[in-house]
Image (tube, rainbow, N blue to C red):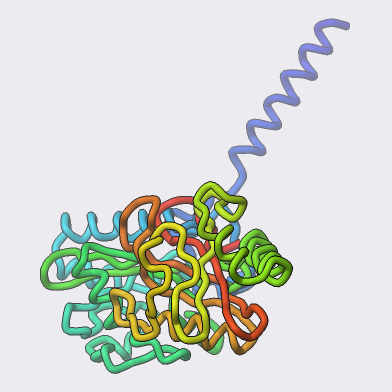
Length: 323
């Protein structure tokens, strides 16, 4: 009887091993959007949940590492080999809808795996759907050592509709730079926690009045400092009402100030808040790192006479860029 039990266990274990050996391993190379279009799997869309099997970058750190790894490979293998590899739509530098692109510092496209007809084009005159001169900004970031940019760019499958995207760019050498991005959504960048934080501040402002509310917002030990979230506020003339980490700026008119890449971000705060509130992206000094980072803020109106907002800094870390 006992011998029969041991035999049954042995046979069962053997079958499990055989079955495991018969399973198909994931492909050695990443799937591309073009491959996905002709496979049994559905095409990956910006709003889809990506299978972890494909190891798509999903956070701000992962997309930076993706680009850093490509830059290291490019340095080791030389510019000619790197540009050829980056242009290969089914090569190792294309992973679903994430791909490496390359340009020189005059804005000429060197590698665009899903837009080969635009290789050799000067991208500097081009603007995205919001009018942002994204290539000029990317060149500034690359010359400065690297950074993140939020913009709209065609999705590399289907009808290639213009889609919200965060890219990380960096230099390879003094002749060209590369980037790669994650297609994202506003509800990921402006999440429920951030919206709730701004909503609570607005309610407090309406209840307490502007003077008492801004005093509370300016208090670095107060209830409106939560981790890396804090409230900033302006009147509609562009005068700073609240900036807890830059108290010397309170009372200063910043209507005509631009950020390091030339955005009139204060004007945009006021325009977006007046129109009902929404998202604004710009570059500013991160008080927690003393580095100039991309910041994505949510702003809203208060009583039609002033506005407030808060945002998150996009830096290497666990900032979720795609679900």
